[in-house]
Image 1 (cartoon, rainbow, N blue to C red):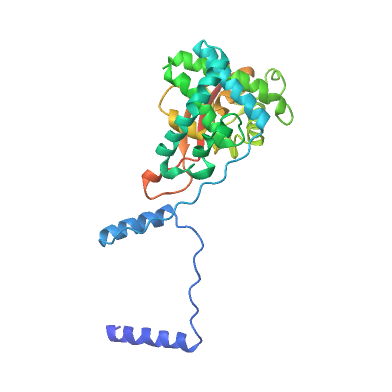
Image 2 (image 1 turned 90 degrees about the horizontal axis):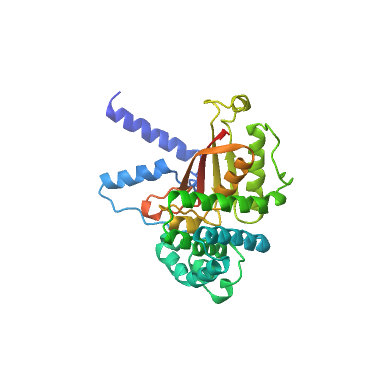
Length: 316
């Protein structure tokens, strides 16, 4: 077919469509662009030498979650006691030093957290006020308080063994506090010879207790690798991988500040490890990652909102 015939056919088709009625305006797309679409736009603009797309205004940070105040105070006391024991000082010394550190640490948060993720009147800046210095009411207060406690241990530059001992002591204290709050409550001792699937049920109850207290916004335990038959064999095939995703833990800001050292201020990992130990399981490996579930074209805008724990557990 000749080019002229193609043009004529296309004109006739458009005229027929127009005569059948008005062409409605395209519907607006409500779905967010995905990573592939954003990458394609970036490369297309680069090839065509077009200016980059205008930046998207950052969404305001969500309001802080309220915490169970009595339980939050008890969890902070456990953290302070574990740090005090590791440093060889009284717990009052740790809590007093933490209160003195909080205002300067709040300023550091505002400077280092990307885009002021917790800024404004409802973030860490507000947490440095006098009224918030003595009362823990929400996740930002709690997070900043954890940083003020664990930064003291981090400044002491503990050895790997000392840091691990402090972490284990903290886990044991947290387990004693959270086990009775689980639904149903966790028993004082695990059933002898309990399968790994039963232990995973206990892990979920502990995570649910942390969520109920306001420490976690959400959680997920991936136990698809669990095989109770292999677990019972207690041999080289028994070690099993578990993946725990912690949504917006109330220690995320502190963890980002202390990341890279031997001291981790998170509470979920120590209490889960303590529970596994109490059930006759051992933690062979533990890896921790920060993730941002929102795609951002600019990597400098990276804002983690979850922590992923990869655990390899084995029977003792």
